[in-house]
Length: 273
Image (cartoon, rainbow, N blue to C red; front, side, top):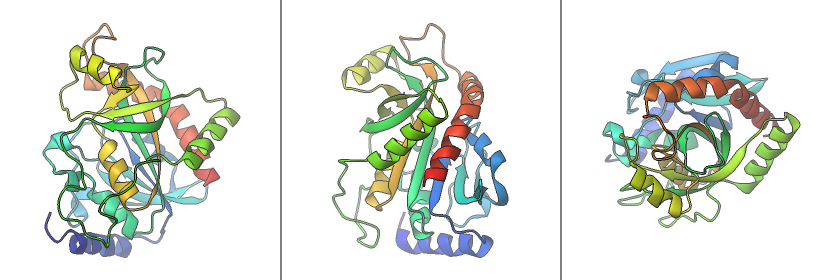
């Protein structure tokens, strides 16, 4: 994506012309987890296709709208649907909205996803705090020439998911009696569900869950100096662990069932911010 900085500024200016709220916290909502926006008020909705330079969401369960409004009186921004490398986008296109969010003044980014459980203590419907990631994708959004106006050439990844946000998430979960897991998320290219052999390899490398998103956005947001929190919904157990074949419909169904707890948890975390 040539002249990316200029394109980001063009996109940012367009979005600013369409909104009246300018939040500090944003959310990227994964498959089946877009119900959170139903609880937002004073919503300003911009379909992705109306936003200059924005990609289009092509995956079922991803509505494809940028929504700005309030959750319990607190201004927030939500991406109802994300972009994936397996859709044919470059990593810079996948993470383009994160660059735009930074220019819009977003400081805190909550990333969510639907993913497969590798840790055998997990079960479908569990919510997991992501405490680290492993990038099993073949690329990342920082490849290529670096524009110092965005960030440093060699960003640190000591704390990709900010510990102070993880502590807030745990505090809210305890107060609301929300059960949760914690673990490492592995980003896999997709779009096929991993083989049993790949899951054994990924598990031996320290992953508790695996999915096809989140890692690129985490890398970009850290590069841009944003505070990141990741929460995954375990919608299925990974290949070789669960006894039935995978289906995207079942993923969305499980995510929908978990959405009530998920929404309550996210709303509580945003209050703490």
